Image (cartoon, rainbow, N blue to C red; front, side):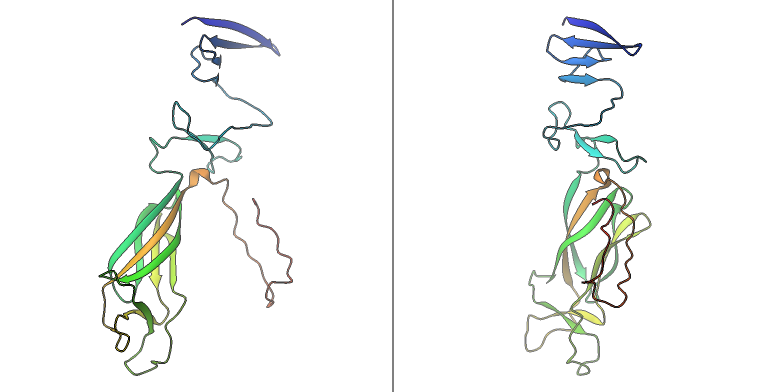
Length: 232
């Protein structure tokens, strides 16, 4: 393949431009593989991308900002063929044999340094797939039976020792089998919990937004002037 050589003098520095027969233009590279192939650093005030979320035909790369650099202005290439996960991950986690007290600490082994994990949705069931599950107040049979179980369970992801952990417990309540409406089973101890988890690769995060602490002073917040979180 023939290659034409051009030399451009700019501000007393030398820049070599190569134009291949394919029509590709290379700067500091004699074998340009794209319409414009720059081997070196570039500096510009504006950069417009056509279809930035689509993979290229030559490498399947995605452009994403990195939260590892100090300035937050550089771009990194993400290659799904060599990366350990996609930028966005939707995971279904099914836990069986769960006791009626729930889950105190389950280590998902998901790296908390490189991923952000949140619970998108969840459901409860019996071992046979039935969904007749409810909450009951913890107490002796016949004592405080008029009390309803906590309607707001503590179900969340949290960081511990570098990985994401999962918790699903209930305040003063336990899960019960309600397949028999007249006599629910308070001894059933084999539940199935299903969690739908969104896992985001931190490569796409612009920055870590600082914690926000607002004192409402005893008011309901409707009349307060709340500052907008930084970065939005």
